[in-house]
Length: 331
Image (cartoon, rainbow, N blue to C red; front, side, top):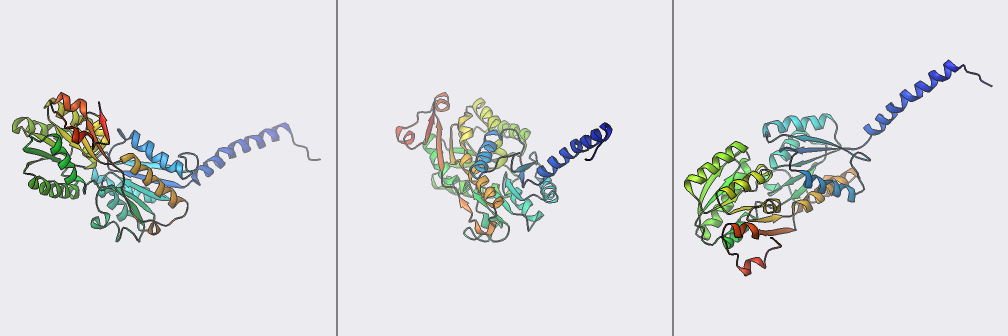
């Protein structure tokens, strides 16, 4: 029989207690890591993050339990994206997910050619240079195309049905997102000419510049406002709705969250559905699927939402033929 003294027993017990946190930390460090890269700030992203986590859950992953998520927010400073992407690479993320515009995905692509990347963008990823093919992405990237830019012409047509007396439409774009701005102005410009509308371009890439853009609205008095689908403008929807309301200006957005906040209408992809799909692709990669074996998903669920309360406040009579085409009418 081996005998130990009371002091020796306490020493052994203390050593075991000290080793336990190390073992726990080692177990936690062994969790696969999702690097989450976004050009925006974390505020106003609650519902989207909820959809992202739900998508992971559907694949059997729970944040903090069997997967770790490292968030990197650029706070609307796109110049920080390369640095943040490099940081996720240094942290040896298992997969990097990108949202908040194509610039985010391009920063991640530049940072690594080996770590899988799952992007969420609003325009053709082949044209952006992210993948060579939708069906066979090749390389280390795949993801979701929301098709928001491709839907801009259709959104303007629906908007015109709601405000048929509008002749001059202001189009708000984010100049910091040059690719999105170019595509938006091309799509909206062509659609406006086809239905006889005049376009006034407004530019804003900061909250203060949004205020300045609306000061111009107060002077020039356009008949309606078309907000481009840039990530920054979507996240500033509350500010935009409040200013549009102050100027009694009908306004359209690409995402339903803005119509829920008081915008006249929205038409575009279901963002929560897209975030679930996006997370599910990340989950499949965590389970071993290669990005090259996952075709780029094109958004297939679109929502036309009318805020009838806002329409009444603006004195607009929405035709029944338009109401019946809406997926949701907010009263």
